[in-house]
Image 1: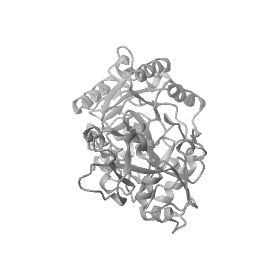
Image 2: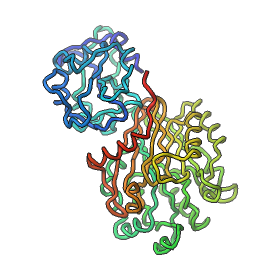
Image 3: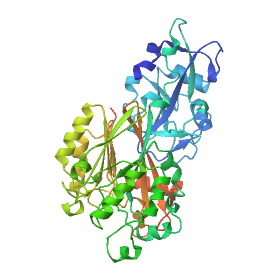
Image 4: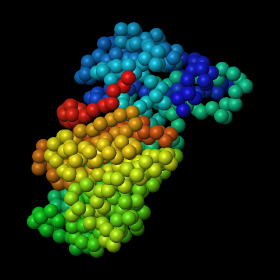
Amino acid sequence: MKKAFTLFNLLIVMFIMKGVYAEDTEAFRRLYAVSAPYLTITDQITFENLQCFWNGSCDKIDDGAEGIPTILISSEEEPFLVNVFGSLPDRRHVLSLMKSDLYINSNLANRWMIIPFEDIEPRRKIIQIDGADILSNRFDPDSWPLTAVVGLLQEGMNKNELPVSNRDASKLTNMVLTGVTAMVRGTASYMDLDPLYPASLIREPLVEADILHINNEVPFAEKCNIEEHYNGLVFCSKPAYMELLMDIGTDVLELDGDHFQDHGDEPVLMTLDIYDEAGIPYYGGGHNKQEAQQPLLITHNGNRFAFLGCNGKEIGYAAASDTRPGAVHCDIDLMKQQIRALRLEGIIPIVTFQHLEVFQTKPVDTVRYDFESVRDAGAVIVSGSQSHIPMEFDVSSTNFVHYGLGNLFFDQAFFLPETAEAFIDRHIFYDGKYYNTELLTIRFTNYAISHYMEADDRAQLLNRIFAVSSVEGLQ
């Protein structure tokens, strides 16, 4: 992929500045992204500010929160970028390096890059420009300012065999993974008035996901009395609450939660019937152990995924057996075998756990061991669905491990300050490869509803989690 877009392999030349080119020339559009070290708080910049930073007419980013970045570009890309910005870069702020040297010490604070789309990788955060996100499936390439327009050098080249752009939307998948959903107690009391209420302020990114994962820990039951929820941790949800999961566009359901068999086999089987009727596939739980342990295969835009999940607590939380429905207990050795086999087939394994719950940002050793075991076997995304607070993560060039996201729909807003906060993880895949992860952050304001965090709240949460998280070094 990358070789197809180098200056020499494409034999292309910058045709004219700022996106204007002769009408009789077939053009190739080269899209660029701004990337920063992954543990960067700043989320976006204006193109106007980037422009004046490039030419030296301003000396800070828009909010100035993290100081003045040094922008790195490769010398191979400099001719293209000169045509984007209309001038040579100011060498005080912009360093042009050989591509082989570009990533040396690039994970140092405030080392930003301008890179072609195909050079995006998981260990660096992608900065939005004017609120637009090049990783989004709603991205409009026609309005993207970091675009170089190039013409073909040789008239004899077969133009139909060349791509229009180095970013092909038909190869992109946005996958959203979420934390705890338990439509019970205080959350349920609001849903009795309006089943769609809990998602009303966070709905858009959920609906827009190409693949939306929901970890629903609780079975549906025909006779579900909310008052009983307060007398013990025995939960059920009313079938009417399924309207919420349908409204947000749920694509995949994780069923390895602690409470899936709180009311016995009959509600579990009824719940599975509801999901089957709605056409929503599930994993980590099912009609029996064998079904629950099977990887759930999903393909989108040519990207092939397998979802695997299990409950890592003591056996009583996961009752699925050869003859009984429910959540499935973890068999890590089996899961590792499955992951290795999937990778050999070119399938991307996504592993989610219902595991030991701790109200701290760092996982206990048992949790860390299981997460790292499946990662080392080849899982690309490993995500903790069990945590009621945001937890640390580890990111490398090939995988993302998040030990806990926090609650999506659950009534713990006032239990601890941290239970009012949560992550929603948006994982980006492109052309069969893991590309990046965007961390969305939400805050609860009552027992049912949350909203996306304002800048100050988001910075506080990210700083706290970044302090204990790790990013594989770029050498």
